[in-house]
Structure formats: structure tokens, C-alpha cells
Length: 227
Image (cartoon, rainbow, N blue to C red):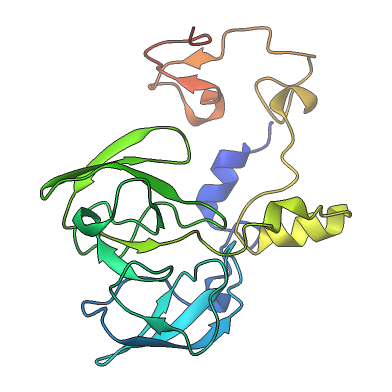
């Protein structure tokens, strides 16, 4: 008898794979009204790569992703200063923005990690073209909102973890399994690729295979490197 694969264990919802969501501060989203806001506090957010800024607006208090250099007492308006929340059609070409909405009113979906930003390529009243960190150009509605500047904690990746235990707990608070053992390094009873130095068979499998054999590429349209 073999053991359950990693993807099968995650489906059971055991304590090793549960996300510690009770520690999360909440999801940072743009409120409906984004004028005349004041930063009242900047707090640590477990499970996130950036801190969170507590901003008080006229109607409600919201959690936002701070920009590089944001401080308590800073005003959050709709001008073109860092930290300002504006529509994409009002962003000058070449400007850096982050926490960009994919659909108007969704609260921000992309460029939310520490140090990330998108660059405005061309803009219009209806459509705007952004250059993402992945060098992909994306066309979005001009009514989507974004924040001027760069997401905070850009130097996070410059500091090494130094110890494996620190990396283990840092990944655990984000609900990420670490270390991740390759299938070919397992025993044959634990993984279809186990017991060999490399996969001795094709990694492509049918989508109709039983769960114990669903490893590798599921019914791929293409394989190999893109040239």
C-alpha cells in the first residue's frame, strides 16, 4: 500500500495545511470613497510581504498597502503624489503605480507584493496599457483605480533568511509548504516518480487518470521549452 500524494493530503484539510487566517489583519481594499484620508497607523501583517496602513476616510476606516516611505499622519488624496489613489485614465505616462484594479471597484488585484509596481505605457479615457513586472503588457479600463508609487518593503528580498528554521516558519504563516521535496527523491511507495534519479516515463498524464497517478502535466496542449 502506498501513501497519499501531497496534493491529496492538502485536500483533507489537516492542521499541517490549514492557513492561519485567524492571525491575518484583513484584505487591503480600496473603499468606495477615497478622498481626504489620513494614515493613523502602520501595522505588521502576518502572511503578507508588506505592512498595512490603517487609513481613516470620511465615511469609514480602510486597510491599504502603503507605498515606500509612507508615515503616520500622511494625507491620502487624489493628487499625483506617492500614495494617492487615482483612476488609471488620470495617471501620466511613465508613472509607477501599484495595487491596480482589474475591474472597476474590485479593490485592487495586481502589483500588491513588496517592491512591485506597474508602469503606465499609454492611457486613454476608456482603455489604458500597463507594463507589469513580468514584462507583460495588460489593457485595463480607464475607470480602474491604482496607487501612485511603489509598494513598501522593497528591500525584503535583500535580507537572507540565514537559518532553515526561520524560512520554515515564514513559509508556514503564509500557508506554503516548505521544504518541498521533489518526487524523484522520494521512495517508490510515496510518489509515481519515486525510486529513480529522474522520471523514467513521460510527465504528461490524462485528465481521466486516477488520483494516485495525477502528477506531472495534466493533458497539456504543448510540452517542451518555448523557443
